[in-house]
Length: 343
Image (cartoon, rainbow, N blue to C red; front, side):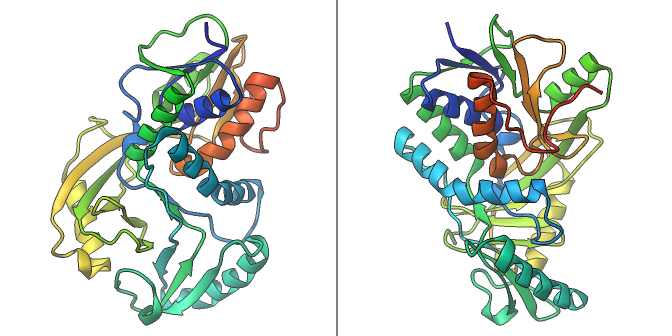
């Protein structure tokens, strides 16, 4: 018998299982497809911060999560013997001419808000690290807080760590009796909404592409809403779309062509890079845009841990520790704005 069962083997479910298993709990993970089969099995893996201004609980928590990420993924790699592809190499963003003053203001605020752990620097594009890119203003922002990992490798590393710790990861879709945590992605948000009679979130489809270009030590690029993320396997991930309406959750289409064309305009080094793979999946977007955490109203012993949307990999390790406190010890330290409440 498990001390708890976690339904869903995406990044939230696996990170929580790992946090609980590290504390000595007997953990069972049940996934109806395969680990990372949903949005956690994508290509991009950008762990990027919110801008350093208008500070609030969510931004402060994300900063702390990014600060602890290196230690978390190094530990997972050591326990599992598998590389999650994590590296904190920063991010470069081209600046529009009318945003230069704002960028300098944010640099000043980052010196205080990021507590000396990382920098937000305004640089001439000729001094930007990594891949050459197009910046019509001649200026870029380079932050040293952003990191990257390879989602599929990260999921495999967590599964390996769980197996090493004696936890089980199984295929199925039926929850047993006892304590159950639901981390079932966008479909789980739909189930929760139906059960509580309120719109608590939905799925947003994303598509991405991997191109063959080896630059594993280059920082990621973010421009015009597009992530360009170099990885350790000789690829650069390009993504992703945000599609509220879709018929095929896992099908790729011409939207991928548009991503590649846009990326090549931004970063000419990608023009001769051949395509390796395409991916599509649906991300769980809570209506509040913040993660949903807490007891499932009306279901004794059941909890919800969902809604990572675009920041799931960045936030999951820190959120998992808080969720483990609640589930294992009854200690509620859920951050403001993240708590699941009855509509």
